[in-house]
Amino acid sequence: MSTAVRQRLVAPVWQVTRPARPVRVPGVVLAGMRDSGQAPVDHRLDPHPVLTLALACGEAGLGIDDEATGRRHRGSLVTGLGFGAGGAARVRATNVEWMQVRLSPAVARAVLGVGPAELESSVVALDDLWGARRAARLRERLAGAASWEERFALVEAVLARLSGAGPAIEPELAWAWDRIVAGHGRVRVEELADELGWSRKRLWSRFHAQLGLPPKRAAKLVRFDRAATRLAQGQAAAGVAADCGYADQSHLHRDVVAFTGVTPATVAGEALVATADMAWVDHVPRLSARWGRPGHGHSDLLRP
Image 1: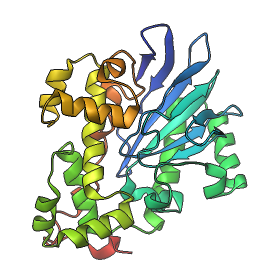
Image 2: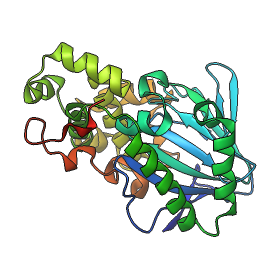
Image 3: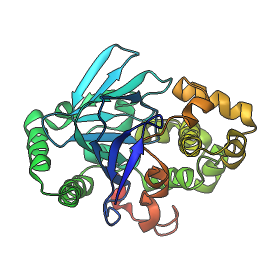
Image 4: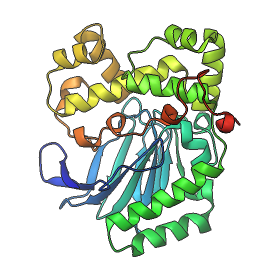
């Protein structure tokens, strides 16, 4: 399924294609991105509650400028949880095709070879994680594929192999992450700890170590992601604040400015790549669905 995503209500910038069927790898959402605009792409990169793997489908890779550090990144890239907070990163590209792979932090270590905590709020070249030869081989295969569906099948097979062979997080933490995502960030850390039978300190330390963020920060990021998507759809800020669990519109305003560096009105006037049918939390397979609630027959196979 393809849709045109507009930037600032002018000519279409991205032609977005999603797989015809859901990805079978838990914690993963795929999308094909093609720059279809007449002018170079230049837009703000907002933070998300996922790690994003941007796979180049040819020689011209995606470009990300980290204005906080002054560094420019090109090619196949990986952005960590919360990268772009404060509006200090921009996506710049011209005539480029790439695949967006959104990874739950619960599967990131298995797929990438490093944990989310090591990539928090940063962007790195895929060559540095997988090795230049391996990354180049995948880029060549993606460039030679006859269709987006062929590319999706190729990447899904790679991700399935990596996620099945790599180290995984504790099932309790997969369940806690799913609870935060399913609740759109409107979950209290105390409730999670109580349901797990853990202390808050134990939950905080293990969650942070294995998922890359403290649970409260993770919930805040998930809530913001949902609110930003609705603002970009044109929904009124007051309604978004109420629906997304903010105390009031001022609370929403503070969160949006902290995460993006701009006001909710500015977010509402700029279409995001993650539009309604691309919203990660609405499509990602639940990681803990196969194990059930911790303590109720879940498998120990996922323990490190």
